[in-house]
Image 1 (cartoon, rainbow, N blue to C red):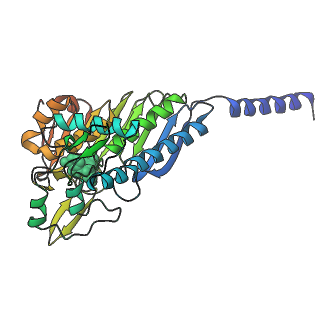
Image 2: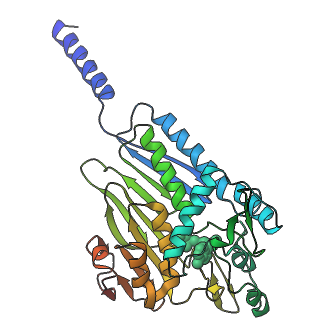
Image 3: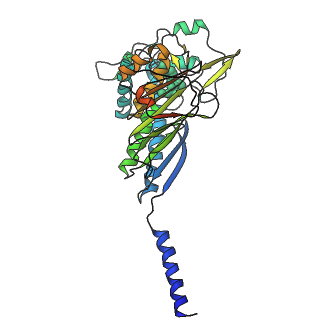
Length: 345
Ligand code: AMP
Ligand code: MG
């Protein structure tokens, strides 16, 4: 072997090694089941400690799931059982903070978001982890649950313990807890040095940073079929949450009964098939998607105003799409011929 050939081989080896070691930005993914769905975390340009960061995030999300489970063996389930038995309870800082935030949002939601309607949710069978099958509850059953209590039914007694005078109070954070969990996941990633990431919990998500040269690209699911309704680019610190009638439902005698309940009627809200909200705060986006779904075509603008939401989109059951100007400027529809109405909130 000549000296020249040998030096070329050495050079080639060095090139391969330096290429292998070069810190080119990369994407790392991690998926697991938590908060009732598949959670996918995608990190761009991960820090050295990415494995610990992802493990800490998974642990934090599983703790959120355990905290907010409203039936069975969750922390909130135990609180609910004791409250409805007339007992006093202690609320730890995390439970109290979440419940207080939910109560504030509920108070501004024009009655559409009410996390105190667990008994109604239970009457429809949407509390179960199994797929609900019906039948729908009878009118007599629903009448006993109307009007439902609000979170204001939770009060402190003279000793500072929590108690309720309304035995129908059953706290269900199902419309809000995923937002809280996604916030927790993002905070945990950031505390571990992650700067660019997306936490996607079954289509509800929050992004930080960018995917290198470009923003994170998001698809919004079409409420009918499995296709994509629209695409949008999520900026740094942005959450995209959707409430849809396709997520949990059963059919009974040809009619679809889904899991988003109008607190005014104790029945599934009518007229809307999905609502998508974009907002920095994932918990608010989650609650607002549910609230605007219940508000429907006539009251969604007032509800969006009351909640401070400027990016909202509703798909109605007749196929019409209503959205705010700020949402329109961020979204691209797959089908350019969609019947779209742009309405200021
Ligand atoms: P989401 O998918 O975020 O709209 O949440 C729906 C879940 O929240 C349901 O499965 C119920 O557990 C609960 N829920 C249903 N209707 C309401 C409502 N109007 N306000 C608050 N929580 C609700
Ligand atoms: Mg929600």
